[in-house]
Length: 117
Image (cartoon, rainbow, N blue to C red; front, side, top):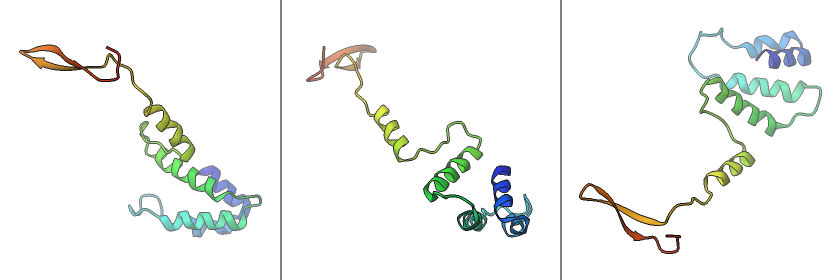
C-alpha cells in the first residue's frame, strides 16, 4: 500500500490524498470499492507512463487474495489456470482392476477393460 501511495503522491501530489484516503482504518466494515475506483482513475489519468489496465486488474485481484493471509488462497490468470488444469487433468496409472470388500476381505472382482492387468 505504501508503494502505491508513494506512486500516487509522486504522480499527482499530496492534494489527491484526501479523496483517496476514505474513512480512517477501522471506521467502517464496508468494502470501499469507490476508493479502488478513485485510485484507478488517478493512476490512469495522472501516472506518467503507460498503464496496462489488465495488469492493474490482475495485480489488484492477487493483492486482495494475498491480503487474506491464507496460503491456500491464490489467483490464477487464464494462462496460469490453463497450466494448472493440464497438471491435474493428466492421466493416472494403476493396475486396472475393480475391487470389492467381500466377507471383510479385499477381493479382485474384475479387470477394467482396456487397462493393464
